[in-house]
Image (cartoon, rainbow, N blue to C red; front, side):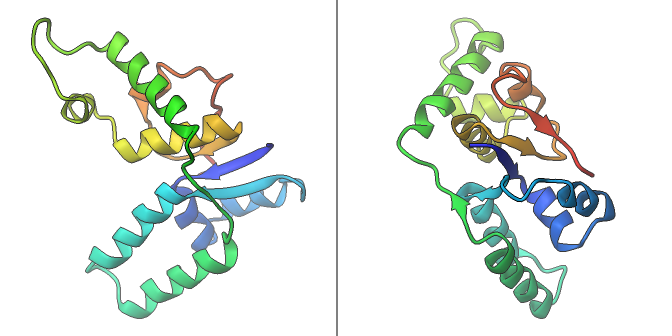
Length: 156
């Protein structure tokens, strides 16, 4: 599969018609996929439900934009778990918990600045051979996953 997977910050840029993003998007060949992951859809939906900084009409407009412009989302599938687990294993090998201390996975990852949703999104991009478009640094993930495995770009 050839194409791009949009993180939430690039979905926002698309919705707001950020000039740099829109210019890059126009250069993408018509047969190239531009998709969103169901994890990112969940992040956006949660944000729409809990935000208090915008009015309901703006949030409704954003929800309609997502349905109309990004109707085909890539789901986390059974095979995605292998990519997710590989990333976590690599992070644990590189950033082991303190010796002799039993540490739960999620708290350890959070202590390293790793967002669980980013792990899943990265895993989906890797599984499908998509370039991940994000403004987020994702430093810990990017230091264990090579650019040949997941290319990451920022169009903002």
